[in-house]
Image (cartoon, rainbow, N blue to C red; front, side, top):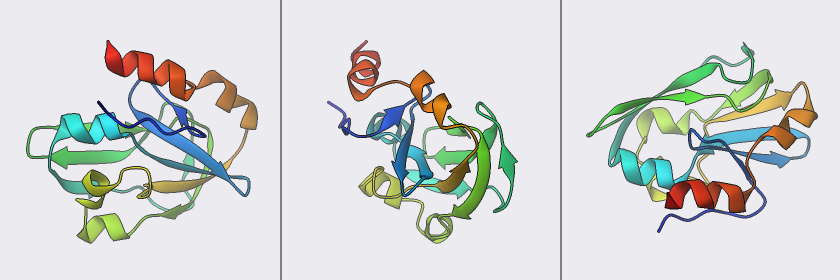
Length: 126
């Protein structure tokens, strides 16, 4: 079974959000990386880009499929995890430690629209 971490928010498209020091870190869940298989490429967005909840942040390609990364929240990208460009497999090794983007959130109330770990766990079990 996939690992679902407490203290994170989730989407039904398998992204996660972790809030630290007022910023939102966004990545993909363990369930997502397991289903994608070996990740071979991550397309990252530009820093300083404004995003809306539901916007495409980039894409992930694996040996099995390609998948869009969708933003769970609205804000401005302040940092991207450049390490993933040369080492996309880091998302397979630990999808929770290897975030994709850091976002300055515009509206923290959007977090209440995301899934709790328990709600996300139920989706993964279906």
